[in-house]
Length: 508
Image (cartoon, one colour):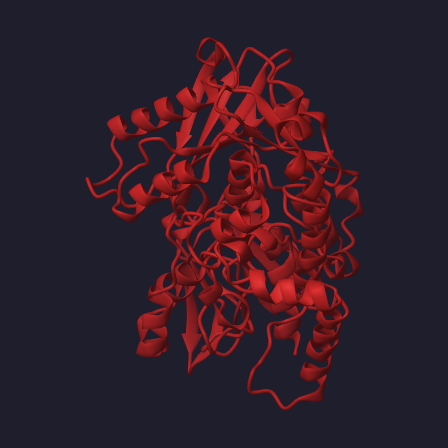
């Protein structure tokens, strides 16, 4: 069958892109290499009877996406009301979304008094990014009134923050989170909790410039620090709902299908060739694979300008996050419905990041953990539970060579030791531990270097510079090829954000 469009990848971005195109009458097929849809948001069975998603952050669905692809079947949604940070004695300190909590007040009355102001102000800042994330990035060469007006409206919204908030917004976005935390809080625990959120999936420590942008990026759509919504229907609910909308519009979804290359003739896309030898014809291809995999892996090099190829090869992916999934006999405390950061100081966080600069696994890594089975009991057998730990920093490329069994065992022991400081007798409750190094994440989820961000969210890789300067508006150098994954604006954690914008660009 001849299609109007091929979408590579059946994660939220790909499914939203497909549904958007189909809603305009296009014949669309979605090709997914895995045996199930959902991309890296899907839950995987890591031992018989136990399933878990990689991330505690379910992401944010922008209102523009919900209007175009009404995924009402994904709801209802819940919101984390608190995040937690572990003190050195193993106790958990609650960081509420907006109000003061008794543990927090007892720990630092001054910071507890400032916390509601901090979360409210930064929620306003994140709302500005949220509105920006529903627009294509600026074309700095544009003379089109249609492109200028939305950007002017956004500038007006920034101005409407008021003089104090606008000044602070412009001041903090390029800062290091360490400088901001030192200026704002007195408690090292509070500083560490904010800093941990700011270095999420970055091979950077809290002293690196631009980490404040990463903090605010992951607050988009949230009520406060680490308070994004999650679907009661399960970790796969958004993908399943988007797929249902697409199928209702005629989208065909094929799983277990690997694309070998994007076929090109006369500088224009003609379709895709599959690993099994089949070819699918289409004049439009939207790839939600990362930029390197798409442009350097699926496109034959003669169709790409060498300078563009070099720029793509220089994209900083720098996968540095490993994941350990534990099947346990004991139920974690209810606090573990939300993410719990186990690093109690910014000094420890910076030291953990330092090792990764030299291709070494952190001796005392930064660990965050949460329990999917507290949110979704059906993921584990009755009476059993799951704890998922995200570990930074575990470089994709170790200086010592490929990841070995010894390296994997060492990683798991370090993570278990960190968890045992806050969950007594944790090791005795573990039935099975499954480690996913960045290399494993690359293999299983098809993301280069195991970087789920598809490119670090640093100041030189955001907005119109994402994925590379000059090619930030979804259309790639080959006519008919568009990039619609997290490697394009607005980046990771914005469910369907890049997909809908790429589809709209393609429809133009």
